[in-house]
Image (cartoon, rainbow, N blue to C red; front, side, top):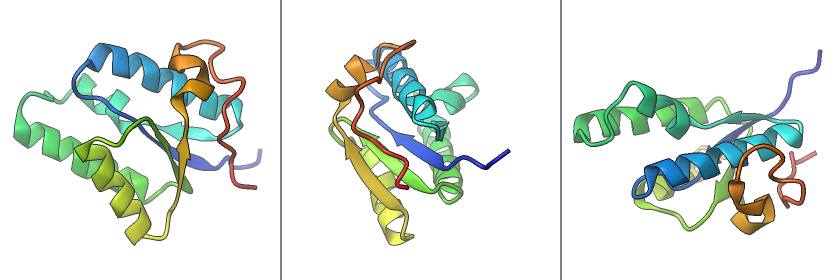
Amino acid sequence: MSERKKMFICSPFRGDMEGNARKAAGYCRTAWEKGVLPIAPHLLFPQFLNEGIEAERQAGLAMGLELLLCCDGVWVFGEATEGMASEIAFAVEHGIEVRFVEPESVEGGSGHGAGAGADASDGE
């Protein structure tokens, strides 16, 4: 079994959290369809951390940066929020490749089957 590249999925979360989580799941599906392992902390950590409590939000962001260090690259979807900007800057500081992907190319990140036309690649 060959090891897949790990891609950190960077996309908006705050605001319309339900809608943004649905889109992020679609972006993860696209990454999986492209043969990479999607890493999306903003889909995992809200399962046990409260985004509305600033200390827990900051803990989630910090843990996300730890995971980012294990990734081969970052795929950025959508306009960068404050949290996304810090993830992008962190990746650049650590020499991790950052790619900007048009969300529309992932058919709105709508879930199963989304992403057939995504312009992201695994960098090979």
